[in-house]
Amino acid sequence: MSDSEEHHFESKADAGASKTYPQQAGTIRKNGYIVIKSRPCKVVEVSTSKTGKHGHAKCHFVGIDIFNGKKLEDIVPSSHNCDVPHVNRTDYQLIDISEDGFVSLLTENGNTKDDLRLPTDDSLLSQIKDGFADGKDLVVTVMSAMGEEQICALKDIGPKN
Image (cartoon, rainbow, N blue to C red; front, side):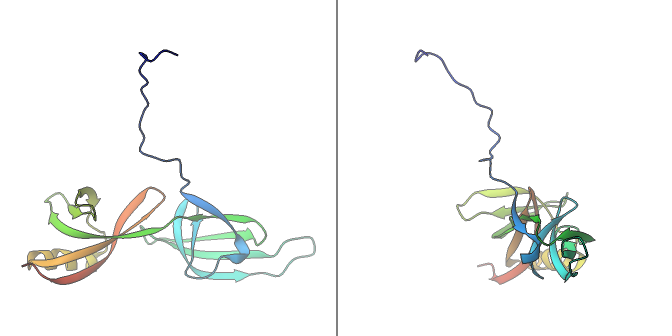
């Protein structure tokens, strides 16, 4: 290859990291995370059945989708692997709320993040809107898993100076 050739790569901004990792079903506990029907869920109940005549002990998981709050269930042999989502929580300072329901957030490195919608949870939504209208300095916690992000919590760090 000569030095004059230029290479163009399509950038997808993804390092190829997996959105989930495998974990044995028997080791997943309550308040952990699991993927049920390809949705990231927080485990609210785990029950394990005894081994049958021919087989495996089974784990019955009840989980609540961390983004839409729907209850999902799954039954998996305890020796099999389940997908567990990589769940991250990040705090951002709230800068602005636009009329179309999007928020403008300040990241740690000083950039803005403008691609997040206001949460669908009514009490959290009203807390954010009221606090912002009162001129308070608000920090929102954003939960991200499997390529989705949503505001899940709010902290008041005092009035703006």
